[in-house]
Length: 135
Image (tube, rainbow, N blue to C red):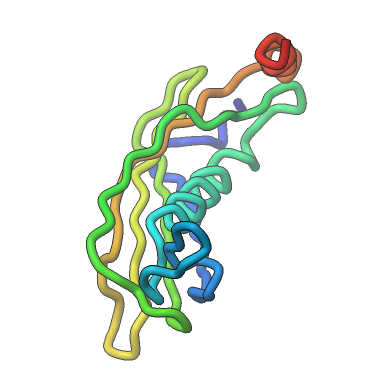
């Protein structure tokens, strides 16, 4: 990793909740709100944005852990802002706290919080692990 990756580095993703982000089971939409799995995707994306600019050419990151508390609903059509912040760092691991906020006219309200972990590996090592998994 480049020395520019430090505790406190952050990145965010802002999205508008769409129908395809609603929880659906057996193709039936259960609620017209932001699903936990969509929140998970956006938390992973925000954490990736913390790491990606600081990878060396021979390195790659891979998700290793994600935990989420989904605190409140966000209706279709409303915006969500997801923020990831580096809170722990070692030569092979980046841990981010991740928070999601419902962006409203009267301010932001927390809708999710969690923790995301990425492992940093040489690209050739990661390719080898993926190849072995597919055999």
